[in-house]
Each structure stands twice: as C-alpha cells, then as structure tokens.
Length: 182
Ligand SMILES: [Zn+2]
Image (cartoon, rainbow, N blue to C red; front, side, top):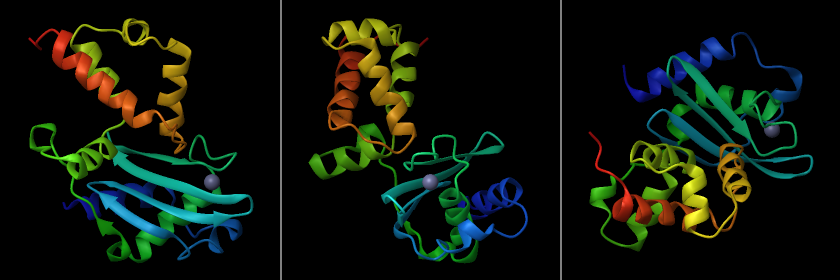
C-alpha cells in the first residue's frame, strides 16, 4: 500500500460518513497543502485567524491536530474538513521528502530535516541515549516547564520561536554526551 492509500484508509475509518455542516464550508479551501509520507499539513482561514491543521496515520490509527482554540485533540471541524479535502483530491497535496540526519549538508537541508522531526521525537531519542528531558533542560539553562511547553505546542501546531534552536540543542547534546545505543 502506498503512503497515500495508507493515509486514505486511516482517514476513512477515523471520519466515516459524510462531513458535518460546519466542516463542509472548509473542504477544498486549504492552502499550503503538503504531504510527507503518511502525514498531511495545510492551513485554512477560520473565524479567528489562519489555522495550521495536520493529520498523520501511524500505529494503526490517526493523529490529528489544529491550532484553533478547540483543535488540540484534533476533534474540530477543520480536521474533519482537511480529512475530506485529502480524500477528494490527494494529488493537490505537494509531496515533501524527509531528509535523514546524515544527509543534511547545508542550511536549506537543515530546515527540511528539522521540519520532518518533532521535538517530542528528538527528546525520545535523547532519552534512549540516557539523557532525560529534565537533565537536558537544566543543562541548557531552560526550565523543564518551558521545554515541555515548546514540545506540546508543536504537537498542537503552535510553533515557538525557539523550536528550531531547541531541536538543534537536543541534537548537539545527543551527539556530544549521549551514550551510544546498545
Ligand atoms: Zn480547528
């Protein structure tokens, strides 16, 4: 099964049936539609600004999020609308390739790499190298609360200005002080 088919199947089982009335008016009105593997991201203009909406298939289910005020758990009508937009026209989503860390050779690659991995995933890798989130936060002079806020905000499609710098700090610490994986 291709990534598109995997995502379509996951979306169909998560949002069965026709879209609700509130979702319908957003279907087909998304911009910056991109797909990376089995994850799609797009923006849409809502009642209180422009929202970033994402849906990812993985682990036999769907993870969705929206930056609107009720979108944290991915249950808002923007998520449903993105789901139906993708089902109707998957080819309108521009494909983005992820870049493995070893292949990053310059600043444009770096941005693509950092966009393709969440701070949560990087902190999990750091933990596998024997360094906890708390120890990392203390080591770089930030509070565990702030680090946790950056991490959970990203999962809700809210992006702190220091998100990229924090990811780089995790990579640096992992490379210099992390224990090799067994
Ligand atoms: Zn929303």
